[in-house]
Each structure stands twice: as structure tokens, then as C-alpha cells.
Amino acid sequence: MKRVPTVITGTVGMDAHVIGTKVLSRALRDAGFKVVELGIQVTPEEFISVAQETRADAILMSSLYGMAELDLQGFNDKRMEAGLGDVLLYIGGNLIIGRYDPREIEPRFKKLGFDRVYPPETDADTAIKDLTADLKARGKM
Picture 1 (tube, helix red, strand yellow):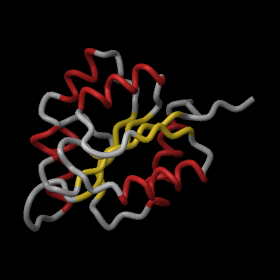
Picture 2 (tube, rainbow, N blue to C red):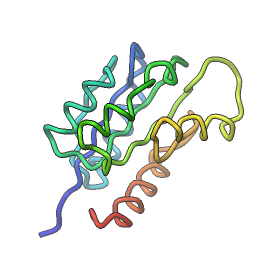
Picture 3 (cartoon, helix red, strand yellow):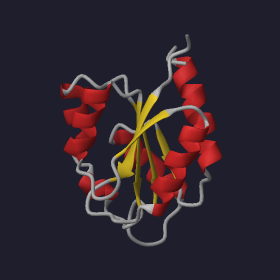
């Protein structure tokens, strides 16, 4: 029997923009993933705790209020200390305040430990295709 990957979704920090996360969660379920939907205003520590409890394969965060970079300072160190270095980490949305070129933002979030960084206009299918490919590459699908 084929293993169904577990994915955690939610908005990080004080962000209350939940619609994108809801749409993504539904699309992930429709694509056959087990989704643990944390909702809004999720602390980085909650993502880590739930990833440990559920033996998650990936964490997909969103942030539209522009403070994700501040919210996630030290997150990767905590993730590694929790033994979650093999958990894929994706983020998307308006990650900083103001206008910016997504190509300038991606390296900043990759330094924070993210495997994939998406601009706000990214559709769910793109993230699902990337997630499927990344999980297959790691032998988790």
C-alpha cells in the first residue's frame, strides 16, 4: 500500500489571511495528501510541535501581512533541534512589506531554511507539482 504524505498548512505569526491556506489545503487533499490544517496566527513553535506529532513530510506556510521574515527568525535552528531536518519547508505570499522582486526575496528565505519560496500569485497546482517532485526525490512518495 502506498504511503500518503502528511502536510501541515497554516499562516505564520500574527497573519490572519486564511483564504489562500484554505484553498491550498483543499487542493492538497484533492491531490491525495493528508493535510493537517492549523489555520491562522500559527507560531513557528506550533508548526514544529505538530510536525513532530504527525510525523509530517512537509510544512507549507503562508504569510500575506509582510512580517514573515521577522516571524521566522531562528525557526530553522529550532526545526533542526527538533529533528525535523528532513521535513520539506515551503512558504508563499507577501513575505515582506512593500514592493519587491520575488527573485530578491527567495534567497533570504532559503537562508531561513525554506526549500521553496513562492510569490503571492502562485497557484496551488504549482506548489503541488513541486511538492510531489520533491517528495519523490526524497523517496517519500
